[in-house]
Amino acid sequence: MQGLTYLVAAYAIVWVGLLAYLGVVMLRIRGVRTELAAVKELVREQQEKTS
Amino acid sequence: MLSLGIVALGGIIYLWKKDERWDWVARAAAELGTVFLTFALITGSIWGRTTWGTWWTWDARLTTTLILWFIYIGYIMLRSYMGRTPASARAGAVLAIIGLIDVPIIYESVNWWRTLHPQAVLPLGSSPQLPPEMLLTLVVAFITFMLLFSFLMVQLYQLEKMQTLAQQLRASVE
Image 1 (cartoon, rainbow over the protein chains, first blue to last red):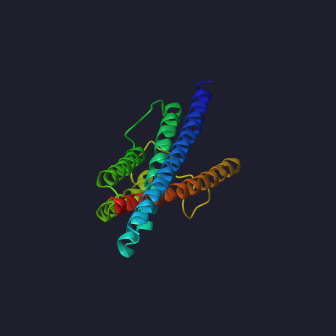
Image 2 (image 1 turned 45 degrees about the horizontal axis):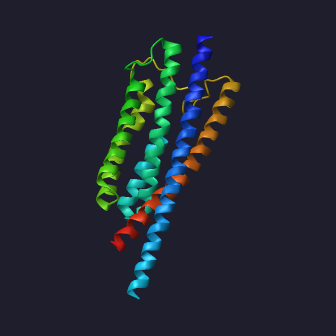
Image 3 (image 1 turned 180 degrees about the vertical axis):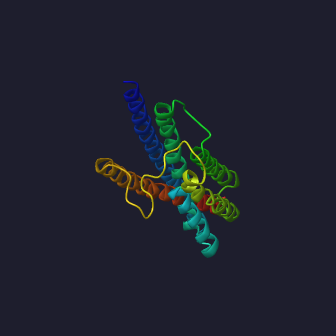
């Protein structure tokens, strides 16, 4: 049973870890998309001011 | 090990062509390599606990793999410290190329030194040393992780691309 406990622990660590990392990556992508949209808006406003 | 190969290849091509897209590939591969290698060290430690009765031993394969992990961490820290600049990309490329030396050492460590770690079960030029059902499991797991790796590489590449673009646009506004 001890070996099975370690096996379950290993699977749990990998699954939880991978899903957590996937979540972090998706959050980072969403954050950058938001920032990119904001900066593009700033650039557009600046171009309108100068034109 | 594959990841560091991609990091080094991306670095070499960046140094050659000065195309920052290859730097994005290198950064993405470095991050992914760190994550996957961390899992490998943790699960390997758990396996070692049940097989050898210890969480860690300074075996050749384990030690060289830990060195690779430190190389990855060093790469990420270096790139983070130097920011998104051509100098950062060049420094990262050099570090990755030097770090690539560790990959064949890891692979051959079980042959070069008397180690606790098992010998290769898929030796080059020889038949597999695994029962068929284990070999099938290994192949399925390998394909699955390669697909996951590819998916995450694409996501991280896009992330690097957008971060670089955001930085450039912000610099043009300020």
